[in-house]
Figure 1 (cartoon, one colour):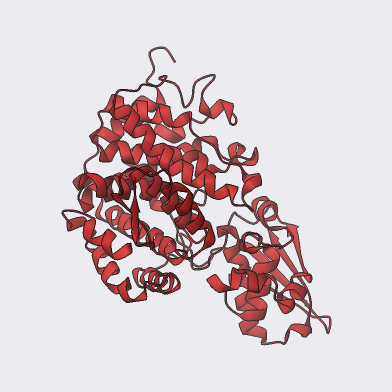
Figure 2 (cartoon, rainbow, N blue to C red):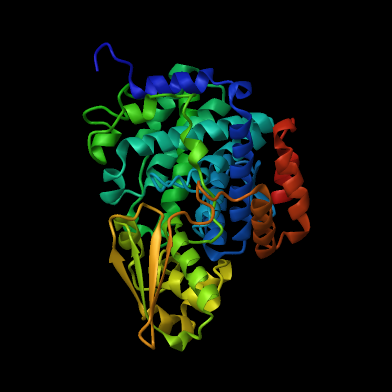
Length: 446
């Protein structure tokens, strides 16, 4: 690397030099949409045991209560609040997605920024700027190590999320380019999370740690801690320790000109992104055929290797259901919907859904792009019917509108017991860029 700038140095310079007013208006609006979607997902699970248990554990060790825990009516210190709020935002697999890496960009980045901004009094525009930059760094680092990193079993939202959190917090803290580079290097030593643990509560720990460890990395860099210059891409650095030789140009090329975060998509269904096309295809077939369940003898779902690797599984709990080809198909064909309650334990145990899941088989079709699916029904009378969805609802090609995101937020707020505050929170979010402080918004979300 002699005579060549290190990745951390380049990213640090980008973070320190970026100006909010130079970012295209469409991207600034996307930051608002991303934060709105994230906060709706978080408030929707305020009553979930995974969230309340994390809150209970962290509260016993919390410092000064200055940062709001979404939907809980209480505050913790910023590091603890970031941990709990990250878990909430990602819990239902209902959050945003960068399809190329399958990273959920907002969940690790937004919670530490909101906690830090609430503690230190930052403006809405400062938060949105840091949020956008953090997610950009996160996705670019993910591009550089995909697909080998994920294929080895590293949960990429957690492992790359810590970089996004560190980058966003470095920007919000106003760190110099050198300090921001050190924050990213410190984050490299705190990156973890396993795909094997996704069906368990250990996934939540990996996610929560990405948020709080990224914040900690930025705070340590602010206080003078340093990291090795090549902590990300060096011979014994993060990328090679956790995968193949990184494609460094994916991180550094076109910074500030080509925006990966512009490719973020939002989910109409609380399930893994690769299952949305399965649901859409089944909803289409259900509407076209209008048949009773017993008229369908078998269902074959075809998709790429990621769809099969993630979704060809037995369904034992809610987490399995949210990443199951079989459950997704059963919901679309049997219930004609796929809302939050359709992935909860009552749905998992529903005898009709369980029986129908047994009719579903998965097969590889490498010609189908990531995020696409083909569903073929074999009917009891021997006929076959097929539907192919290349672009699911919510994808880049069929994005959710502002009105659809607002409706999703209201629905989630109702699930979390905050329906009476939903419209006021939406108004505050849409106007966040002009807010001198974020305290009013956080009060509506607490």
